[in-house]
Length: 261
Ligand SMILES: Cc1cc2nc3c(=O)[nH]c(=O)nc-3n(C[C@H](O)[C@H](O)[C@H](O)COP(=O)(O)OP(=O)(O)OC[C@H]3O[C@@H](n4cnc5c(N)ncnc54)[C@H](O)[C@@H]3O)c2cc1C
Image (cartoon, rainbow, N blue to C red; front, side, top):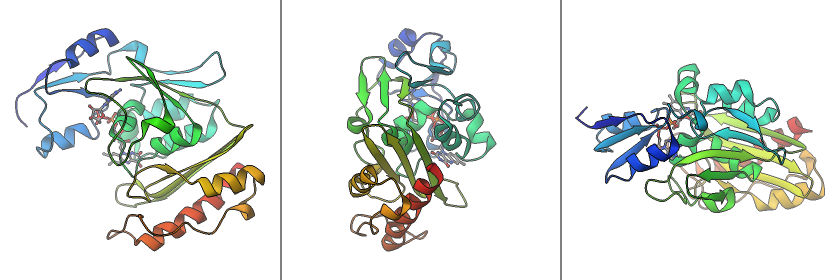
Protein backbone atom coordinates (compact mmCIF):
# COMPACT_ATOMS: atom_id res chain seq x y z
CA UNK A 1 0.00 0.00 0.00
CA UNK A 2 1.06 3.59 -0.44
CA UNK A 3 0.36 6.77 1.54
CA UNK A 4 -2.98 8.51 1.24
CA UNK A 5 -5.09 10.81 3.38
CA UNK A 6 -8.01 9.27 5.23
CA UNK A 7 -11.14 11.09 6.41
CA UNK A 8 -14.21 9.74 8.15
CA UNK A 9 -16.84 12.51 8.22
CA UNK A 10 -20.10 12.21 10.14
CA UNK A 11 -22.36 14.12 7.74
CA UNK A 12 -23.11 13.83 4.04
CA UNK A 13 -22.26 17.51 3.56
CA UNK A 14 -18.78 17.03 5.04
CA UNK A 15 -18.23 13.93 2.89
CA UNK A 16 -19.17 15.82 -0.27
CA UNK A 17 -16.81 18.65 0.71
CA UNK A 18 -13.96 16.19 1.35
CA UNK A 19 -14.58 14.48 -1.99
CA UNK A 20 -14.28 17.76 -3.87
CA UNK A 21 -10.49 17.35 -3.78
CA UNK A 22 -8.92 16.01 -6.95
CA UNK A 23 -8.21 12.24 -6.80
CA UNK A 24 -10.37 11.71 -3.69
CA UNK A 25 -12.39 8.47 -3.52
CA UNK A 26 -15.44 7.52 -1.46
CA UNK A 27 -15.05 4.38 0.62
CA UNK A 28 -18.05 2.19 1.39
CA UNK A 29 -17.24 -1.30 2.65
CA UNK A 30 -13.91 -1.38 0.82
CA UNK A 31 -14.65 -4.82 -0.67
CA UNK A 32 -13.80 -3.58 -4.15
CA UNK A 33 -11.88 -0.34 -3.63
CA UNK A 34 -9.24 -1.68 -1.22
CA UNK A 35 -8.20 -4.70 -3.35
CA UNK A 36 -8.12 -2.35 -6.34
CA UNK A 37 -5.78 0.00 -4.46
CA UNK A 38 -3.59 -2.89 -3.33
CA UNK A 39 -3.21 -3.95 -6.95
CA UNK A 40 -2.37 -0.33 -7.92
CA UNK A 41 -5.37 -0.23 -10.26
CA UNK A 42 -6.59 2.81 -8.31
CA UNK A 43 -4.44 5.27 -6.39
CA UNK A 44 -6.59 7.94 -4.74
CA UNK A 45 -4.70 10.61 -2.82
CA UNK A 46 -7.54 10.78 -0.30
CA UNK A 47 -10.03 8.15 0.88
CA UNK A 48 -13.28 9.37 2.45
CA UNK A 49 -15.13 6.75 4.46
CA UNK A 50 -18.92 7.00 4.36
CA UNK A 51 -19.50 4.47 7.12
CA UNK A 52 -19.60 7.03 9.95
CA UNK A 53 -22.54 8.94 8.44
CA UNK A 54 -25.62 7.90 10.43
CA UNK A 55 -28.06 9.46 7.91
CA UNK A 56 -26.73 7.01 5.29
CA UNK A 57 -27.38 3.92 7.42
CA UNK A 58 -30.37 1.64 7.77
CA UNK A 59 -33.56 0.39 6.17
CA UNK A 60 -36.88 2.22 6.47
CA UNK A 61 -40.28 2.52 4.81
CA UNK A 62 -40.88 5.61 2.69
CA UNK A 63 -44.16 7.56 2.68
CA UNK A 64 -44.96 6.06 -0.75
CA UNK A 65 -44.53 2.47 0.51
CA UNK A 66 -41.03 2.08 -0.94
CA UNK A 67 -38.27 0.40 1.03
CA UNK A 68 -35.53 3.03 1.53
CA UNK A 69 -31.99 1.89 2.15
CA UNK A 70 -29.23 4.25 3.23
CA UNK A 71 -26.30 4.30 0.83
CA UNK A 72 -23.82 3.07 3.43
CA UNK A 73 -26.02 0.21 4.67
CA UNK A 74 -24.30 -3.17 4.58
CA UNK A 75 -25.64 -6.18 2.72
CA UNK A 76 -26.04 -7.96 6.08
CA UNK A 77 -28.20 -5.13 7.43
CA UNK A 78 -30.40 -5.22 4.30
CA UNK A 79 -30.72 -9.01 4.57
CA UNK A 80 -31.84 -8.64 8.18
CA UNK A 81 -33.88 -5.45 7.86
CA UNK A 82 -35.70 -5.40 4.52
CA UNK A 83 -38.49 -7.75 5.61
CA UNK A 84 -41.03 -5.58 3.76
CA UNK A 85 -39.33 -6.63 0.51
CA UNK A 86 -38.34 -10.30 1.00
CA UNK A 87 -36.86 -10.81 -2.51
CA UNK A 88 -34.47 -7.89 -1.97
CA UNK A 89 -33.54 -9.13 1.50
CA UNK A 90 -32.81 -12.56 0.00
CA UNK A 91 -30.66 -11.01 -2.74
CA UNK A 92 -28.60 -9.16 -0.12
CA UNK A 93 -28.31 -12.32 1.98
CA UNK A 94 -26.91 -14.22 -1.01
CA UNK A 95 -24.07 -11.82 -1.80
CA UNK A 96 -20.56 -13.23 -1.37
CA UNK A 97 -19.90 -14.63 2.09
CA UNK A 98 -20.53 -13.35 5.65
CA UNK A 99 -17.36 -11.22 5.65
CA UNK A 100 -18.32 -9.48 2.39
CA UNK A 101 -21.90 -8.94 3.60
CA UNK A 102 -20.67 -7.49 6.91
CA UNK A 103 -18.68 -4.74 5.14
CA UNK A 104 -20.01 -4.27 1.57
CA UNK A 105 -22.67 -1.60 1.07
CA UNK A 106 -25.54 -1.02 -1.31
CA UNK A 107 -24.08 2.35 -2.38
CA UNK A 108 -20.68 0.80 -3.09
CA UNK A 109 -22.20 -1.99 -5.12
CA UNK A 110 -24.34 0.32 -7.24
CA UNK A 111 -21.52 2.85 -7.70
CA UNK A 112 -19.15 0.10 -8.81
CA UNK A 113 -21.75 -1.49 -11.16
CA UNK A 114 -19.78 -4.69 -11.64
CA UNK A 115 -21.36 -6.49 -14.63
CA UNK A 116 -21.83 -9.63 -12.48
CA UNK A 117 -23.12 -7.94 -9.31
CA UNK A 118 -26.49 -8.66 -7.71
CA UNK A 119 -27.73 -5.23 -6.52
CA UNK A 120 -27.77 -3.69 -10.01
CA UNK A 121 -30.26 -6.42 -11.04
CA UNK A 122 -32.37 -5.77 -7.94
CA UNK A 123 -32.37 -2.01 -8.50
CA UNK A 124 -33.09 -2.17 -12.24
CA UNK A 125 -35.64 -4.97 -11.79
CA UNK A 126 -37.45 -2.93 -9.14
CA UNK A 127 -37.35 0.36 -11.04
CA UNK A 128 -35.55 1.80 -8.01
CA UNK A 129 -34.59 5.44 -7.52
CA UNK A 130 -30.93 6.15 -6.75
CA UNK A 131 -30.78 9.20 -4.49
CA UNK A 132 -27.52 11.14 -4.36
CA UNK A 133 -26.33 14.23 -2.54
CA UNK A 134 -27.36 16.19 -5.65
CA UNK A 135 -30.40 14.54 -7.31
CA UNK A 136 -32.62 11.51 -7.83
CA UNK A 137 -31.82 9.14 -10.71
CA UNK A 138 -34.20 6.50 -12.08
CA UNK A 139 -32.54 3.08 -12.34
CA UNK A 140 -33.38 3.02 -16.07
CA UNK A 141 -31.12 6.07 -16.53
CA UNK A 142 -28.51 5.15 -13.93
CA UNK A 143 -26.83 2.02 -15.36
CA UNK A 144 -24.78 2.95 -18.42
CA UNK A 145 -22.69 -0.16 -19.16
CA UNK A 146 -20.04 -2.22 -17.37
CA UNK A 147 -18.60 -0.29 -14.40
CA UNK A 148 -20.28 2.86 -15.75
CA UNK A 149 -23.09 4.84 -14.13
CA UNK A 150 -24.74 8.25 -14.29
CA UNK A 151 -22.84 9.39 -11.18
CA UNK A 152 -20.71 12.49 -11.57
CA UNK A 153 -17.25 12.87 -10.06
CA UNK A 154 -17.56 13.23 -6.27
CA UNK A 155 -21.32 12.46 -6.26
CA UNK A 156 -22.37 9.98 -3.58
CA UNK A 157 -25.34 7.64 -3.28
CA UNK A 158 -27.08 8.58 -0.05
CA UNK A 159 -30.16 6.36 -0.37
CA UNK A 160 -31.85 3.91 -2.70
CA UNK A 161 -35.66 3.64 -2.87
CA UNK A 162 -37.13 0.32 -3.97
CA UNK A 163 -40.86 0.23 -4.81
CA UNK A 164 -42.27 -2.97 -3.27
CA UNK A 165 -43.75 -5.27 -5.93
CA UNK A 166 -46.69 -7.67 -5.70
CA UNK A 167 -44.26 -10.56 -6.25
CA UNK A 168 -40.54 -10.85 -6.96
CA UNK A 169 -37.64 -13.26 -6.96
CA UNK A 170 -33.91 -13.25 -7.76
CA UNK A 171 -32.20 -16.30 -9.18
CA UNK A 172 -28.41 -16.40 -9.31
CA UNK A 173 -26.31 -19.06 -10.98
CA UNK A 174 -23.19 -18.56 -8.91
CA UNK A 175 -19.64 -18.47 -10.11
CA UNK A 176 -18.50 -20.85 -7.34
CA UNK A 177 -15.13 -19.23 -6.61
CA UNK A 178 -16.33 -15.62 -6.17
CA UNK A 179 -20.09 -16.19 -5.65
CA UNK A 180 -20.77 -13.35 -8.10
CA UNK A 181 -23.44 -14.13 -10.69
CA UNK A 182 -22.33 -16.11 -13.72
CA UNK A 183 -25.86 -15.07 -14.66
CA UNK A 184 -28.51 -13.60 -12.37
CA UNK A 185 -32.13 -12.70 -13.16
CA UNK A 186 -34.38 -10.47 -11.05
CA UNK A 187 -38.12 -10.60 -11.80
CA UNK A 188 -40.59 -8.19 -10.18
CA UNK A 189 -44.35 -7.98 -10.83
CA UNK A 190 -45.98 -4.58 -10.34
CA UNK A 191 -49.56 -3.47 -10.95
CA UNK A 192 -48.47 -1.79 -14.20
CA UNK A 193 -46.32 -4.64 -15.54
CA UNK A 194 -43.42 -7.00 -14.98
CA UNK A 195 -39.75 -6.01 -14.94
CA UNK A 196 -36.96 -8.48 -15.70
CA UNK A 197 -33.34 -7.44 -15.10
CA UNK A 198 -30.36 -9.60 -16.08
CA UNK A 199 -26.86 -9.41 -14.61
CA UNK A 200 -23.68 -11.34 -15.42
CA UNK A 201 -24.71 -12.24 -18.95
CA UNK A 202 -24.14 -9.31 -21.25
CA UNK A 203 -21.22 -7.18 -22.37
CA UNK A 204 -23.55 -4.19 -21.91
CA UNK A 205 -23.77 -4.97 -18.17
CA UNK A 206 -27.03 -5.16 -16.28
CA UNK A 207 -30.01 -4.75 -18.62
CA UNK A 208 -33.73 -5.39 -18.95
CA UNK A 209 -35.00 -8.36 -20.99
CA UNK A 210 -37.92 -6.60 -22.64
CA UNK A 211 -39.25 -9.62 -24.59
CA UNK A 212 -39.72 -11.48 -21.31
CA UNK A 213 -41.25 -8.41 -19.66
CA UNK A 214 -43.90 -8.15 -22.40
CA UNK A 215 -44.74 -11.86 -22.27
CA UNK A 216 -44.87 -11.98 -18.47
CA UNK A 217 -46.92 -8.79 -18.20
CA UNK A 218 -49.59 -10.56 -20.29
CA UNK A 219 -49.25 -13.91 -18.49
CA UNK A 220 -47.20 -14.18 -15.30
CA UNK A 221 -46.31 -17.83 -15.69
CA UNK A 222 -43.04 -19.71 -16.19
CA UNK A 223 -44.55 -21.19 -19.38
CA UNK A 224 -44.83 -17.67 -20.84
CA UNK A 225 -41.07 -16.99 -20.67
CA UNK A 226 -39.80 -16.64 -24.26
CA UNK A 227 -37.04 -18.72 -25.83
CA UNK A 228 -33.53 -17.76 -24.74
CA UNK A 229 -32.22 -14.46 -26.12
CA UNK A 230 -29.58 -14.57 -28.84
CA UNK A 231 -25.97 -15.12 -27.82
CA UNK A 232 -24.74 -12.01 -29.66
CA UNK A 233 -23.27 -9.58 -27.13
CA UNK A 234 -23.27 -12.14 -24.30
CA UNK A 235 -20.08 -12.52 -22.24
CA UNK A 236 -17.88 -15.47 -23.20
CA UNK A 237 -15.03 -16.45 -20.88
CA UNK A 238 -13.44 -19.46 -19.23
CA UNK A 239 -16.49 -19.84 -16.99
CA UNK A 240 -19.06 -20.13 -19.78
CA UNK A 241 -19.73 -19.52 -23.45
CA UNK A 242 -22.04 -16.83 -24.77
CA UNK A 243 -24.59 -19.52 -25.76
CA UNK A 244 -24.46 -21.01 -22.24
CA UNK A 245 -25.12 -17.63 -20.65
CA UNK A 246 -28.01 -16.93 -23.06
CA UNK A 247 -29.51 -20.31 -22.15
CA UNK A 248 -29.14 -19.53 -18.43
CA UNK A 249 -31.03 -16.25 -18.85
CA UNK A 250 -34.18 -18.10 -19.92
CA UNK A 251 -33.77 -20.92 -17.38
CA UNK A 252 -33.26 -18.52 -14.46
CA UNK A 253 -36.16 -16.30 -15.57
CA UNK A 254 -38.46 -19.33 -15.50
CA UNK A 255 -37.20 -20.29 -12.05
CA UNK A 256 -37.66 -16.74 -10.77
CA UNK A 257 -41.24 -16.56 -12.06
CA UNK A 258 -42.06 -19.96 -10.61
CA UNK A 259 -40.57 -18.98 -7.24
CA UNK A 260 -42.32 -15.58 -7.23
CA UNK A 261 -45.64 -17.20 -8.10
C1 LIG B 1 -15.09 -12.29 -2.21
C2 LIG B 1 -16.15 -11.33 -2.71
C3 LIG B 1 -17.36 -11.85 -3.14
C4 LIG B 1 -18.35 -11.00 -3.63
N1 LIG B 1 -19.53 -11.54 -4.06
C5 LIG B 1 -20.49 -10.72 -4.54
C6 LIG B 1 -21.75 -11.24 -4.98
O1 LIG B 1 -22.04 -12.44 -4.91
N2 LIG B 1 -22.65 -10.34 -5.48
C7 LIG B 1 -22.41 -9.01 -5.53
O2 LIG B 1 -23.27 -8.25 -5.96
N3 LIG B 1 -21.24 -8.48 -5.08
C8 LIG B 1 -20.30 -9.30 -4.59
N4 LIG B 1 -19.12 -8.76 -4.12
C9 LIG B 1 -18.93 -7.29 -4.12
C10 LIG B 1 -19.47 -6.69 -2.82
O3 LIG B 1 -20.88 -6.77 -2.90
C11 LIG B 1 -19.08 -5.22 -2.55
O4 LIG B 1 -20.00 -4.76 -1.66
C12 LIG B 1 -19.11 -4.26 -3.71
O5 LIG B 1 -18.19 -4.66 -4.67
C13 LIG B 1 -18.64 -2.85 -3.35
O6 LIG B 1 -19.25 -2.37 -2.21
P1 LIG B 1 -18.38 -1.65 -1.09
O7 LIG B 1 -19.35 -1.00 -0.17
O8 LIG B 1 -17.41 -2.57 -0.52
O9 LIG B 1 -17.68 -0.48 -1.93
P2 LIG B 1 -16.18 0.02 -1.94
O10 LIG B 1 -15.26 -1.10 -2.31
O11 LIG B 1 -15.86 0.77 -0.72
O12 LIG B 1 -16.26 1.05 -3.16
C14 LIG B 1 -16.48 0.61 -4.49
C15 LIG B 1 -16.63 1.84 -5.39
O13 LIG B 1 -17.82 2.54 -5.08
C16 LIG B 1 -17.53 3.88 -4.65
N5 LIG B 1 -18.49 4.14 -3.57
C17 LIG B 1 -18.61 3.46 -2.41
N6 LIG B 1 -19.71 3.88 -1.76
C18 LIG B 1 -20.27 4.86 -2.50
C19 LIG B 1 -21.44 5.68 -2.36
N7 LIG B 1 -22.28 5.57 -1.30
N8 LIG B 1 -21.71 6.58 -3.32
C20 LIG B 1 -20.89 6.69 -4.41
N9 LIG B 1 -19.80 5.95 -4.60
C21 LIG B 1 -19.48 5.03 -3.66
C22 LIG B 1 -16.08 3.89 -4.25
O14 LIG B 1 -15.50 5.15 -4.41
C23 LIG B 1 -15.50 2.86 -5.22
O15 LIG B 1 -15.29 3.47 -6.48
C24 LIG B 1 -18.12 -9.59 -3.65
C25 LIG B 1 -16.90 -9.08 -3.18
C26 LIG B 1 -15.92 -9.92 -2.72
C27 LIG B 1 -14.64 -9.34 -2.22
